[in-house]
View (cartoon, rainbow over the protein chains, first blue to last red):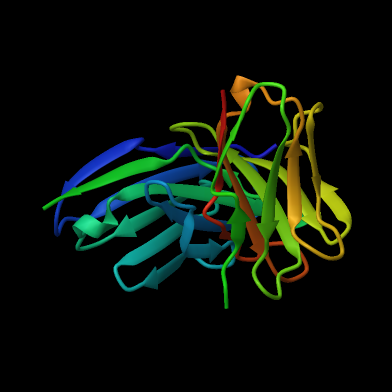
Amino acid sequence: GENVEQHPSTLSVQEGDSAVIKCTYSDSASNYFPWYKQELGKGPQLIIDIRSNVGEKKDQRIAVTLNKTAKHFSLHITETQPEDSAVYFCAASMKNQGGKLIFGQGTELSVKP
Amino acid sequence: NAGVMQNPRHLVRRRGQEARLRCSPMKGHSHVYWYRQLPEEGLKFMVYLQKENIIDESGMPKERFSAEFPKEGPSILRIQQVVRGDSAAYFCASSQGQGGAAEAFFGQGTRLTVV
């Protein structure tokens, strides 16, 4: 089955710097890659996603890139702010398995003012 | 448009009791997924349901756990004879469409504590 690896497990940056989180997946049949932000005591919030027919997607300060050949995808947050501090999860999904998501282990991002 | 609603938010059960977790999907969504999150770990898929059907239960423990999504009413995740290892946050997500790569939105979760 699909396996998703996520790095780093913790990331600390200064406010205004960029943050990059990387994920790799094992099954080339995966075709949908969402990213979720989870704040303490809350549910995961979808922040951006990318499908396998696209190499890059951007939404304001957040961007995601996908390299299908290498089977890895990354989240880029620019001009980080303290409110970006949270745990971020990547995930992968295959079309023939409905919307079942396989999650990475999570990255705890801390943005220091 | 209300989001995914889960209740209760917190649930305390003694070992051996039953736990019932409820999830109402977003309006217009007919696909429901349950995930479990152990402390300081990622989310693990448990089960995928559509109305009156279990589509994929490959992540469900073989015993004590069951799920349903009836024609009317919320989806229910039921844990019988709870043990301390069942203590976790249980999240429900919903999506629309024909399955496949559709955006899934999560509820706030139910935090189960077994004492």
